[in-house]
Length: 151
Image (cartoon, rainbow, N blue to C red; front, side, top):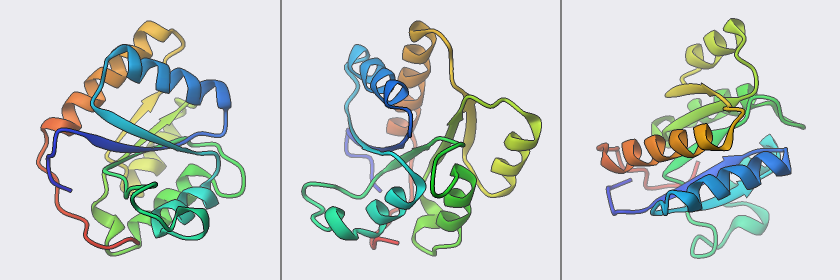
């Protein structure tokens, strides 16, 4: 992933309202980012691997950043994180865990599995908007290794 002035964010969020709030916060910031939304862990893996309905990378580009919910159906965020970190090409992908859980054991497990950072979901839209601005600005400015092949 090279700095190109725009991020492709893959948001894994099973709560439709939370996904809409995130995209709204992104629009409020006029952020240079495209958001792709999946609703469970298996769908995220299919997206990243370019399987099923995600085979066309022009329509579903490989993500430059993954925002991962902790509690999702089929595969949890922690299970997906572990899978991603065990894939040679996905090991470099920046992954942010964003969850309603601020439990120390969840945070510790996420970091032990290789998450780049962990945020508890803000309750207020203003706080979410600011958090999204900071996240996008940070990842747009950071140097990131290239990921050439899908996982």
